[in-house]
Image (tube, rainbow, N blue to C red; front, side, top):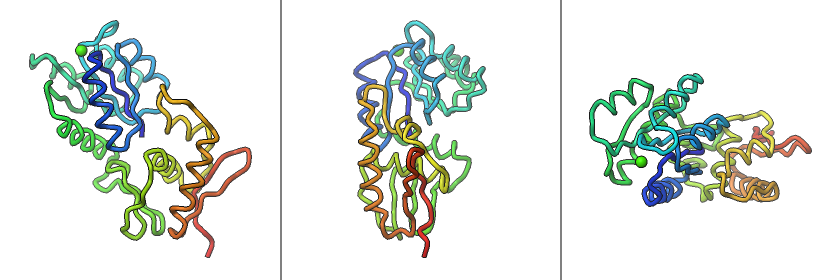
Length: 223
Ligand code: CA
């Protein structure tokens, strides 16, 4: 899952990016409102963390434009201004939650998890097929309750395949969900992640099919 951070304070943005990457998310960062607006039009994000005081385009305007496009992306507002009317304006415009600076990174991670759980529209968003379960918010995968040692990229591949279980996922779709803007995009790397994932889910009752020229599909292993 990709998270977009829209924050012009570089030190804070770096801290946020570090904390969320550690939590298993792919994180993109933009430092002004225009860049945020453009990035959001290309979609592919699961959550927006939005500072209100942004150069070029105010955070509230970024949010207004997002909702005007009927985009229901969960939005967590960061506000350096403690004026209650700002929070109210943000919530009125369709923000899902807000944090007033300064806040702890633990607090941020907890809010992000809560928003993503709510966004799933279910109290149990865990995806399970046969013996394999994946929790998209906690960023963990288990086989019969045992945690699988997966890298962040392997988890992202698994997430995309599980969300589209039984259907073909192209390499381009995997690239879009796995890589952030500042990372080198490589189709060979996708093959490596799929190869490792295959080994690690070997006794889950599932397999990753390769459909040459089309992509991959997670499916039931015939027994
Ligand atoms: Ca700011």
